[in-house]
Image 1 (cartoon, helix red, strand yellow):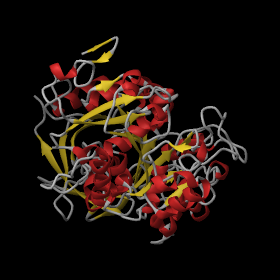
Image 2: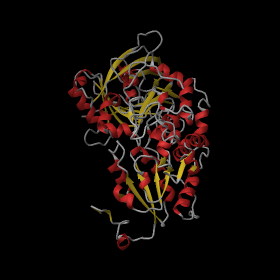
Image 3: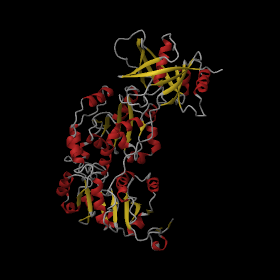
Image 4: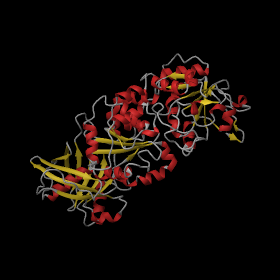
Length: 591
């Protein structure tokens, strides 16, 4: 517990009286904000299973972005020292991923890591006013590295010799403290890349869909920021394009935003700003967990000068730069080189065309300069960092196990669930076998041509989720939709829910209950009930196309004057370049 003087266990004036293991060496994690904590979480496993080490944590309290810190520190499950106590407590090693706060007051050796892709940005010290082109390079200049002419850190951890070259030129006094130890975040990404297909399935992305990830750092000049000098603000145009131009069954969208956006403006405010996009299918990725997996899964990243965009480019993902303030960067940094190599997103013309061009014209090695400078020891940061940490602690490394980082876990299954009304365009491709093309847009005001000359079998209808924000749209819907487990007592069973919906909304022609990633139950106006089930892909995985698209195909089938015939007829549903084989199984009608 904690009193006015701070913790009493496992540190404090009388800690030896109360601690069960009182002779441990102390390692203090110095957390500046949630952003810097992400890198400390990367290296935390390096001292797991060592009974000789007591981990502690503290927050300097110096960051403007302190929201979210109590919850994060609590989640660590480590003793958290108030900063005043931490400054007065001798430790064997302190590890920080930021230069914020009075690090000179720490009582022990200090190792400082980068919390991003090396050191690239200009940032004025807290005493130096706002960041501008004259500001020093964060982490590589005397303004940040020295205190009273002496290095703050015992070890300045760098990931590549190019950083050492810039450090030696800018602050030769700190060069002797430099240690090359790779990039643990990058190594975790590299190790997980073979699981790309699994991460895509977790996001509900089919092999033929294109996953577009929007990434932004913080600050007014970021992609999410509102400062523009050369054109109108890009973000509103981008968000509208994501929700109107991209066919719902051919693209999947997600956003990875900097923790300082999340906790500077508030998670609730962020969700409110992105409400329309989220209702149209945009997934907002948690700033601590899942963003690396989203990068690995992505087909294109629309970003800025953030580390997230740089990591994406380093693993060969096509990028489009929506914002890139060169003045905020060290021109000799690898991230600045990315700005010279990557195409720019322009707020005019077609967003879809720009995305497709960035993906189709991308060539392996396009960002080789950046990739080669992320780490000089890819895959080796764990042993290098553990060797450094134990040398500073004054202990021999554990000899019974290799140094390892935590592997990236597979995220929970989170397919797009659109509660915004959807406009579905349909076309009969053939009658034998029966094949219907469906193109859906999560914005009923946007209805482009399906391509080619219009035929007599072309049609369109509106699909509305039962939880739509505008309940008045339900009275005008052609298809009403629900996503839930078949045995969900609030809505199910599907046969009951579909009957209730059709009874309640007289203009609705079809009710569809999606109960799994590859199936849904539909009821027609005349009471016929069908189970629609998609065949698995060649690898045996469920067809992750939104099953609501099968309901739209059945709606078009009925509009053509036909009804499913036979015991289990097969319907071919085409979305973009993909053909889905769907079994239509008649179910008994309700009494």
